[in-house]
Every structure is written in structure tokens, then in C-alpha cells.
Length: 472
Image (cartoon, rainbow, N blue to C red; front, top):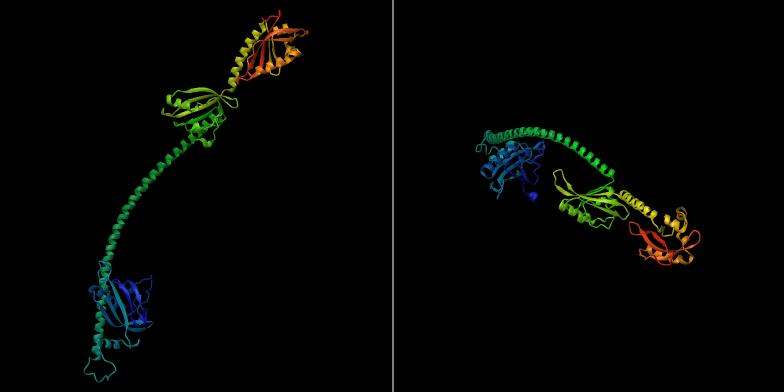
């Protein structure tokens, strides 16, 4: 019902921007050519724009309704007569609170054909009554020329008002354009100043970039030198065969060489862990953490020989880690293998002992011999040769069983077994068989020979002949 019986209209602001359309406004409005606009002044059809422009301007200026009757609007090649009303929308007239809105109403004039001449419409505007005898009122009403003049004057006034409004809008637009131009000029000056600053900054950045490139080149050179030094150090440490561990002041592992894993069970993921958490392969030495802490506390190096479960010997050295600025930042632990050196030293000592022992054995009056735990004769001195008749070469090919009468073998072998277990035996009487078959009574003193781990590997005996049946 509203669409059918209410006039078409639009809600616009004071500049003509359309906010809402109602009814069939296509007879009065059409999209303007070019970019899409929703401005009622741009969209007004031919014959409507001047009156709509002046009416909107007057309504905005006076805040009162403005009416324009009998406007001829061109629609699809014909003309439509419409009454125009522009009035402020109630409740939104305070521009400080919200923009002023206007209601534009298009009301078609009923009973006027679209093609009716403008003179008829003007007659309607002048209040002429139609449908009577034209001659009857010829002397009473205005003449045709007067009506024509009145219509033209009205149209001329509307045109002048339209031109005045257009001039005012043009003036306002010019002022706004000048203001915008001044603002744009100011912005342009600011942009020019900013551009100059950017140019200066660009030059400074370029200079900084060149300095950074130079610095980067120097850093690359130093990095290459540092990498070579690091590789040289790693190769040096690897070639020396010395296991090395670097710890910080909290005794956490910072770096280690692969050789050290033979003495301490280390893997790459142990870096950063306290050294006290690492399992070592050392035998009889559990003071590593305490000794390293003592080196850090007193700044005094310490060395100790340690042995692994595999029987290898190492010289364990602990020293403070000093920087080039003489700052203590931890400790350096090194493991230098001395197994062969220790064996050579032991061999020299054994050789000296054997040399002295050989002189003693050679000059001794008692028969002195040595046998392994299986009874094989390992040593035979000249006194034994004189006592039993076998030369040294013959004796070294014999077993001690060959010198023991059958009735005494079990006793002799039992004594050997007891001595191999570490028991100490008192001197005891024993019978031996000489080369010529005679039985020799001797007083025998046996001593177990042990290795570095304390295990017996041979038995040495000193035998003195009993000639008168009395223990000498």
C-alpha cells in the first residue's frame, strides 16, 4: 500500500548524497554517466536538476520546506509533470549532533498527460480553471500573453536562483580547492623536506653499509683465521695422543678430545654436564672432582699416575685454565699415556734387580732355583748344579717333579699351591734326587714371586744340603 499510494522520495543530506530511496524514483532520477555516484543532484533527470538544486539550497539555508510545482521532467523522450517538495527531516536539524537530513518528495500531477504543453502546466500553476467557455472569461482573466510572460518570469527567476546557487557552490568549491591546494602545497613542502631528509639518511645509510661491508669482510677473514686455528689445535691435540678435558669454574665439561674416552666414558652429549656425573674407567682413583676443585681453589697444578681397567697407565695432570687476560675460567685435565714408559722403567728396575740377583745367585753357596706354578724350572744357579749334578741347560728343560722322590711329590706340590695362594711357609725338610740317583736331604725355604697386581706367578726356593742329619 505504501508503494502504491505514497509519493516517491529520497532521504538526502545537505550536499544531496542519497541515504535512502522510497518508491519508484526512476521517472525522476537516473544514474549519471561516469563513475557511480549516489548524489541526487547528479542523478536528477532533465528539467528537474535546477529546481531541485535551488530547493535543496533554500531548505538547507532557511531550514523550512520548499515547494516547486508543475516541473516538467523529461523521461524516455517524453515529459512528466511533477510537484517537488524538499523539507528538513524532523528530529535531525542540529548539525552539531548529526548532519542535517532532508526529505525530497516527488509527487506526480494527476490528469496531466505526459505530452501536454508547458503553457497548460503554467496555466495550472497560475490557477486557471479549465473545462469552461474560453470566450466567457476572456474579458475577466489575464490574456495569453500575460500568462506567457508570468510563466517566463517564473522560469527566469528559477534559472537566476539556480545560477546564483551554482555560483555560490562554485565559489565554495573554489575556496575549498584553494584551501586544499594550500594544504597540498604545505604537504608537498613537508614531503620535499622529508625527501631531503631521506636523501641525507640514504647517504648516511650507504656510508654505514659500506662500513658494515668492510667490517663484515674483516670478520670473515678473522673467522677463517679462527677456523684454521681451531682446526690446527684439534689436529695438534689429536696427534699428540693426549686426552684433554676442559671444564669451567663449576666443573662442567666445556670440550674434550676423543683420546680421553679411553680413560673416561664421554660422549658428545656430555658437554655441559658436571664431570662428577661421568663414569670413569680408572681403578683405585675416585678423587678426580676433589683434586680438580683443589686446583681451582689453590691455583696449584697437580699430577698423579692412574690405571684403567684395561691395564693402561696414564699421567693425570690438572692445571688452571687461564685466559690471555690472566683470568681463571676453569681447569684443563690431561691424560698422557705412560704405559710403555712405566713398563720400561719397571723393566730397568727388574733388570737391575736381576743383575744383582744373578750375582748373588752365582756366588751363593746354597742351591737357588725358580719354578713356575706348573713346576717348570725357570732359574738354576751354579750351587744347584754342584749339589744335584745337572747343568743349567739341562735343568731349564726339566720339571721340579724330576727332582722329587715319588713319595714326597704330593707334599711338595701342596706346598706350591699354598704359596700360590699367598700363604707364607716356614722352612721345611725336603728330599731331592741327584743326577747320579742319590737322595739328597735339604732344608728348603720357598718364596712366592708376585706381579704388580699381587698375584703369584712363580716360586723361588733356596735349598741347603743336610749332611749330619741336623737342621743347619
